[in-house]
Length: 318
Image (tube, rainbow, N blue to C red; front, side, top):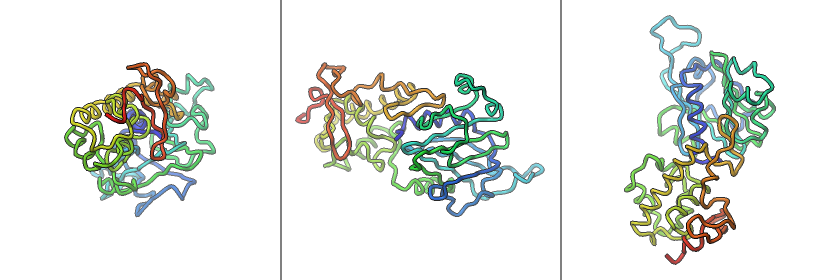
């Protein structure tokens, strides 16, 4: 499942393409995973995309009502409530945007990458024409562009909600902690200390404590801080907590710069694999020498997940 950096890569690409566009239509074949709530298609038609953002691991497309001060068209009707479209990619989700120009794309994959954006999991391959049999939702815009949400295994979902932040977070279905790239150290420290007896790796992946962190970046942050993933939070000193805060932020920021991680077949908006794991230190490095001490990286099951760590640098008895 994409974590904070991978979703950020997709969000940044979508902002360049669909910010300012006006919704014309919505089609879907997936009623069990498409949630309208109290809204309908007419509430979205004519709404303008004010921006695309990330909340935890979820893509949030914010919409604003069209102005009615000028002569209104059939698409320019007054709406008292601004809305947001929430999209969770889960295990096989893809987001593909193509405009009028890209509808005439050549069979060359290089030409295709120049005319559209596509990100997520390459199953099916992202260079296939869209829509296709895995397309669950199609958002049409007045510029004749389309945003397709493909999901081969149907684990992901789309929800339409009020843009009020409490409503957006409620629709995600779980309590979300703060964004690790925005929170200050003191808040980071306090939120971890509230889980005193919890294991540090499990707690880092708890979305109610910190939003957006999963298996990859918890491993990477703990390696950078020299902390064993089984350590209890109460056992961590102030210096270790500061090192963990710094290590987590560094791992996330580097990954965003490198286009995310592709251990789970994620690809960025150009259909390219993320390069972060070429710079990673622990995750998926089982048996390879630690970058600090050359001890082979170990993989161990913990709390139902796999943890990767250096048994010499990240000692449990620290």
